[in-house]
Length: 477
Image 1: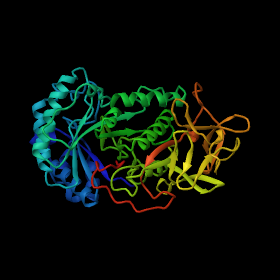
Image 2: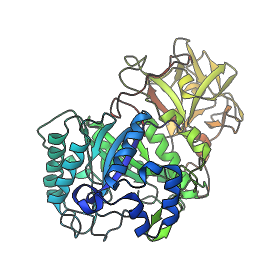
Image 3: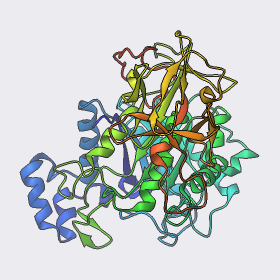
Image 4: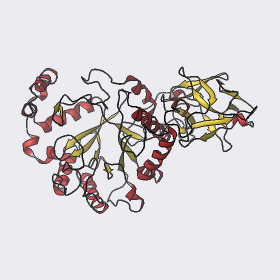
């Protein structure tokens, strides 16, 4: 499916509680009443059935390594179980099951255990800090200690720090920065879901909500990227059935930001179901990439849609990293605008995108040709032309989302927007859903003009080199 890394969760007790760590997998399943699951392991992975849980965990990491998949070890909880709630005792330092000293010991043990495991490239210190006890002073005290403990035990891994409020906010870093003995490998992580971002995706105009929420997300954490710090969106996700309108709207907005800022990300989640979750056997994961029985992709169209985001748009090592250019990205499809001829512009793979220049006077000029994108009339194909001084060749980004690419027709001053038809042809139509109407869907008219240095300007496809790690700039999951 194009992924290069797994964010692999583990509970602190797996590293600090010898009784749990040494419990054979068979016993772990049977003690929970899951004899059928144990029988399934016997058929599919018999070599694992009688191993201690900690050794099963190591085998998973090794199997990923044999398949050239990187691993980020993510301390999800202290106690094994489903995460997360405000009052599960695992939320913040000093909670019932969250002893800071035990946590530090667990981090040290896991960092040491995988010190020489090359595909373990990072450690996330704690998932989704939360609850009544959370405060900034203790966050700095213990996250700095945790970072130093991991670095001392394993200097080769990235150290990833999560924020507060279920990892929705890092805004306290505006006024104070983390102080560590090492440099060059500190990463921050942030989460973004439609149900937790403060937007009314199902009941308000989609342009308005996207613009508002992106403002929230930038204030809460994305500002770190603008300050030069690595920021990893370690969780985003949506209902893969495609039937959840609010999730669908949120997703398109998220993908536009991921493309524009060339984000690194991880999607929740791979699993189609759980052995057991919150007391329910074989619990279905509606956000899972895989189907309930793990035999197929739950939403194949989504895999195609994120393909262009699974390799970097920008960064060193790409063929045009010294001279980036603009591409025109369509977040609804995950494709980019490609010039087939002066009479036909359409959506195609972003690796085959043309090189555009978005000028200070709002023209979209096709590099090295002297031609620019022009609007002819309502309902006609967008075309290339050489007279770039006309109003129909000046494209402004309008609406609160900033994703309507709009020009005025020279003949009558009518404002039109780029619009992708179901077959991928690019037309100019009347701009839709600019404000207020909560039932209007603007996504066919949403485009992002972004910087890129992938591919060769003019549409030639090239072979991409694999990422050397999740923080050689790559939009990876």
